[in-house]
Image 1 (cartoon, rainbow, N blue to C red):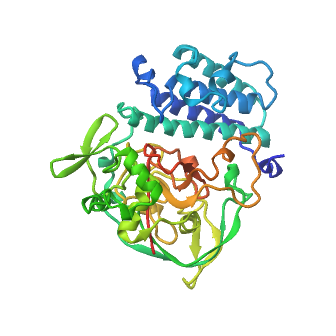
Image 2: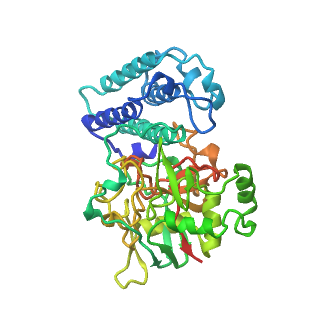
Image 3: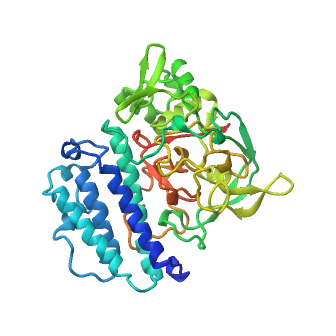
Length: 444
């Protein structure tokens, strides 16, 4: 039995179905304006065919909710042969006999109706709650992927009605936020605790780690700070790069972050289908782990470990200021879910805001934007925690990737707020550039 069932955690019928409808509405909005030609994306290593994406998230609900809970007749014959991401190689997805867009939407509606019908007139069980939440959060992840797919393909920004970052309300502040905060060392419990309402397998379970005192930046590295690294020959100085990083830089012929361009003496960046001036105090984004590592060598800094990052985001200082309490916050500001005043999440702004924005979202130690704006690379490779067990039913979520990826924390502006909690572990290969990822640094 899954640990969440042991705790009897449930959500009300209306709340659970509301989340399913909300995730679907976001998915629809992310592709609503695209033409048939835009749906037929070219073969690309960083994207999927959009019709495949829509069918895949639908199939996940059918496989991990309806079939797990007893459905015997498939709602689309052969769906597993089309949409099971661990059976269908990435490049083969372009040659599959996929249903038309209309047929794909009809498939989703059948699944949607079945999801609502099976809970009709009764309270969900703990098992149902877990499976529905797993599927909703899976769709949220693919929704964020659709945002950076549109960026990769130079499509217009998604029509979600969000304001541009330049429309940031005055009361949220802005500008740079230099300086470090001092974090006391001690025993810290890294990972999720069983009383949390939902966790993924790789967050289990909180375990003690010894962390030495350290100093961490109040905010992520900005575009202006990263530009100084470039101007000082950062991409041409071999001594700043690890062996793997230098090999990546050579193969990618990288001279600056992805989507940056020179216009005279100034930098601009491509935001979806538009070139815009590079905002100097916004965090650098679309950088690989290798670029973050090289910048740190140049600046005489280092990336935080996963434990250091999570401690700075979730721990609270003791009364005497020389240690930390046993309390661990779910979010940087406390235990209440994010509000629009605390974090740049849910595409409320169509891009990154200045690192000085959202003071209401600071951690207890004074670190800002540890939820929202960008994902942050850490120094830690993605490995299981002690006692890890392959999770039922989504066995492929974490286990295939251990040792091959780096841990990212925090959540980006395109991340759904229900995924932006302190113990959540994102993970990508160190060479990925398309993700909305940047970094903050620690003193050496």
